[in-house]
Length: 507
Image (cartoon, rainbow, N blue to C red; front, side, top):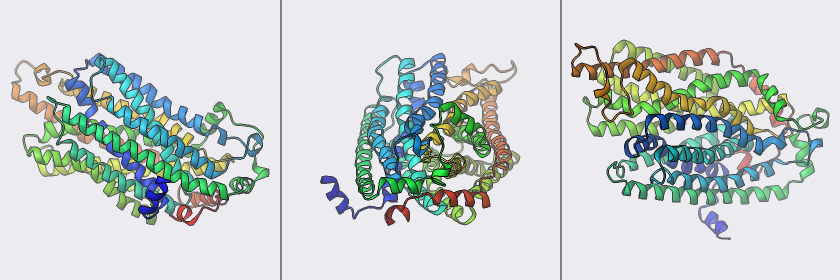
């Protein structure tokens, strides 16, 4: 009753608005996590190098396996035919995802708090915290992303849903700006209190919004006749139905033959690597390329704007997607990444203003591309649904399978980045004063060490985007789910879409 009164007081917010607001609660936690968790364990808890690498390796395995595991548990019943089980209507699918969000969301907020208090040996705490946090984050992300494919089919409606996600994600990025007021490595008390407030807001938000959306779809589920809904949802209806439930092995075999899926995950693996490379090494680039050339306030501004600008920029990208299509916009962004990298390489590390613009824009455009890729995955969900005549679109499972292949890029980014930096310059981030541990040629004075490190950071900064862009353009040129083929797939999928209420169908 209280939730109904609150919803009435808010003017009955639209389904798209409520869906987008879930991104706010993810963003306020995850941005702070990405920015501070490595520094907390390396600088404050003093984790040793071996424990860090072991922890990242365990995290790599868990991070890759939990997405397809959770997706399979969530969507395995959708892979068979109507004759292989009880009929499943789309409102029931949506309600199932919302119930999962109402549980996993508050648990994500609780696991976020475990990072900021030393309660175990650093190596053990590092592994446990990362695995717990990533497990609940995976459950939240899978269900939230799956709803993007379940709530709408047309590109326009999905773009509108993604628009609200970007808007609320931008608001959530303000937590990065606020965190500067509380972060102090010498005294963590204020920062811990700040994190408790963030976790409380996120937990309450997940519970409230999930409940409001559940009420909306429970009403729709009661209005729909199950048999009629099933008849509308099956592409081709009875003649196209499968005879048996699809096993995990059969599903993996189907995916391996899904050509567009394979090219997409190849491209996305490189994209995930580049996104996390930028996140991990952004503060390092600021320190060694710009710290003696710009003020601390300018550095803080660049760091903060790099978190909020991708979401605001994405609002413009989504407008372009409506007019030109997602495929073209992503291809343009890859070409832009390549062009900016080559320009910066030719200009050199002494062009400070150009370097500031490149460091910020590199992260902004890379993150912006990442946020458009969910639209491509929803198109792959549609293609999988049509090609294999699913009972229901296995959206969470497909998102999970994409993550199985691409999430290792998260772990490879810091490992490969620190290795390249160490090989080229001798710089080791795990030492208290890494510059003192660089082994130079005998005649090389100490100031030259800083110059060598600066040069190494610069080449790392520009060559990684250039290499990533070339690999991505090659993979993206083989992707065919656009133009007439995409239109045909969506027509077949929309033929099975139920008649949603106006607030849901026409966002």
